[in-house]
Length: 340
Image (cartoon, rainbow, N blue to C red; front, side):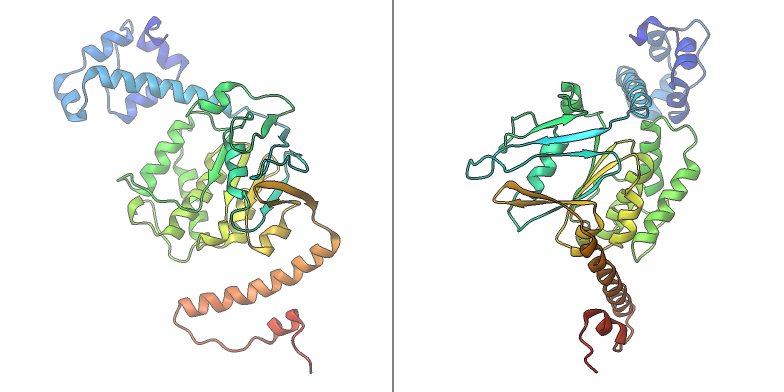
């Protein structure tokens, strides 16, 4: 459809100029069509870019498509996510489904192998009774459009997995700039600085914009993607798989991700994270066994757990720095182990 416009018209109506700037391409003539512009680029310039004019034209179309989608997605607003009952590993119907609303933070708990990751997968793929669990996922009470399931550009769901290994041979700043451009953010410099600063608050060893992605440790990579998800992703649903195993400050990471305009679901074995959530979904044998609200008594336990965790965190940090540790009486006071 872009072939129907001149380059000047596209620059006025779209983010075409950003593509030209990114690739150091010359300013087009006023009446030049898209095809004419790309087919008449100087040979030396195209050679420096290392691509054929036809491939460059394809990239131009893809860029305009992605930035257009990003702008549409920035206005997305969903209110509810419903997980309808499916079946457990033995073929028995689940005891219940549940509905989540914007602002809900939900923990998913259960023994290893109970189906926690499968539940995340069902939500990520907007399952329509076509996964092993036969669950049905509804958005605002309706079946979501097929494009929400199968389009690689769709960002309804953002997922943070246990393993965050990069293979792109670029620096952190360039990676974030590319993501910002795909989200149609024109001047991302200040935002990129904020993302890197927030990521460094989550992990022990700091990195900067010039650090190679492939040089990041597992914890640094996870911290970067947590901050990236919090600031650059418009997805209204965030799925987190065992954030406690990431080697980062999990409480700070969760605080960064939890926003009033998102639904957050996290798989966890950590009692602190499980009780921070408003609800917890209990899985057993591949099926949903219960959906529990965090009680007032459990909130009191959460206060104790937070105090214990603060002491353990201080011990962990001291050991990492090669320091000696000593007994902290407050830990025993919290645990009720001090008898005298």
